[in-house]
Length: 169
Image (cartoon, rainbow, N blue to C red; front, side, top):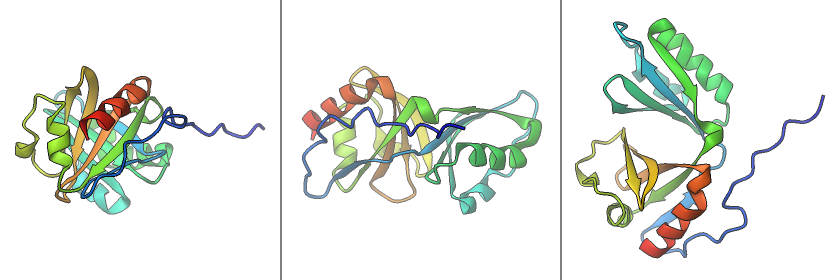
């Protein structure tokens, strides 16, 4: 049986933004991302319990959630979500089609505000939102930690996004 190919970052051959005081930008390689959509007339399971299993759940809209895990185990994450949610939701793996950039520090909000029409200062902790930055569709997830954001970008737009980010910083 052949070895499983290792996914390569589309940013591998491109320079990252120059470091800035009080701001860090890094790619989070291999992050598992699962979109969760609740089925009509079905109640959600207890999503809060998944945080202890290394899965972060962010609400992205009515009946829609995005699950992140840094454990690099898409199948295991989907299995844990399936146990909790049962038949009440549909799960969609987004991991291979998107990459995550983590932007952290006191200047993170200011940098992101340069590209999105949303007022991210009003975004609740542990939530996420679909938006555009420089005409690029992204999902911005705000951590419970102040000043820490994960930006999920379609792989095909990653180079354009990192070019925008380098300019915005």
